[in-house]
Length: 226
Image 1 (cartoon, rainbow, N blue to C red):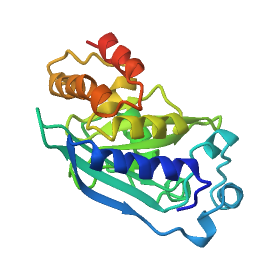
Image 2 (image 1 turned 90 degrees about the vertical axis):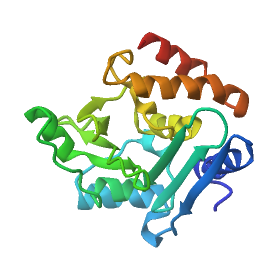
Image 3 (image 1 turned 60 degrees about the vertical axis):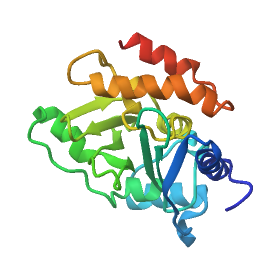
């Protein structure tokens, strides 16, 4: 990987943390090859503007990565079972809609429309949950991040931008359901109590297991939703 690409380096470091923590077992890792036409941010934004009429602003540069896919899955080996997975798609793949979101007739019509229009940025294929996160491009060309929980038939807008989503993905190691920390939800509801319990374990454990990360902001978000 290019030593000058900080996000790719951070992904490699995150994998190393999972492997070396003594808390978790890495069950899958894959960094896809770099496509010739997708290895440079300037080339990518120019092509998307031409081919998709989508204009990425400079905020997408911060966590730009070159591989078509970065896929990591793990599980805890001590204490209560915690599992994590992220499968990040290259931004060109996302905007050109190489992955089509499912339809879910349990959602409200407006939510189904948003889901159908998402440009998928993150999935969890090994877990088989069907959960995903994606970008929704509004009528005024703004970018919103949404999270779809297939099992619970929930679609939530997240209080994150694209780069922020990638930042938290690495800090949370893709722990299942971390996205609810950035949604307008009550985690003490019957529907989400299992997710809340998992996130409590994560935030009780991770500060000690991964001491190079500051989890205080995520802890505050959890407590605000209980």
